Amino acid sequence: MTVAEHTTHPIHTRTGAGIAAALIAELAFMVMVAIVSLLRGMDPWMVVRVPASFLIGPDAVAPQGFVPGDVLLGLGMHAAMAVVVGILYARLLPRLGVSAVTGGIIAAAVLYVLGFWLLPLLFPVWLAPFWLPPMGKALQAMAHLTYGVVFGLFYRWLSRSV
Image (spheres, rainbow, N blue to C red):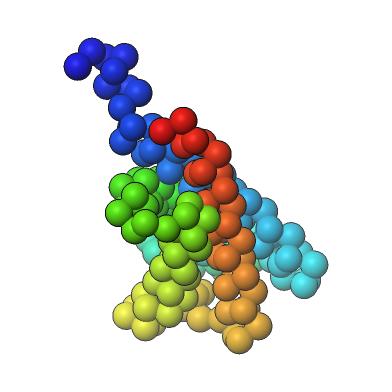
């Protein structure tokens, strides 16, 4: 197999499409949640900073506002999660036998359940920022649904030549 054949092999194209689609969906998710937070009179930077609590605990979200280190760490966590999700999605979607959008919604549902139900139960003090009131959980569910649709649509578009 030549270098040209290797870089265009379908699994590499699907993987690249999965990573790119996940990063685009992650950006859309963060912008949407930041705007909704701002409209609700809440900290628009929270969506960016909360994933940093996986590494540094609840201090990642205090004080409110733009805190450069927390924002950079949160952005890095969002990007890292997107890359992992994109790779897994590209590898698993063909095996699931569902459409790209349905697969995106499934991926988003898994992320929502992990991030807002399972992990906070396992690490209650460390992941306190993930405990949300019912309205917050409903908004996050809608945001994750949107993430899944954006993810699936972009994956379908980016991988259409596979």
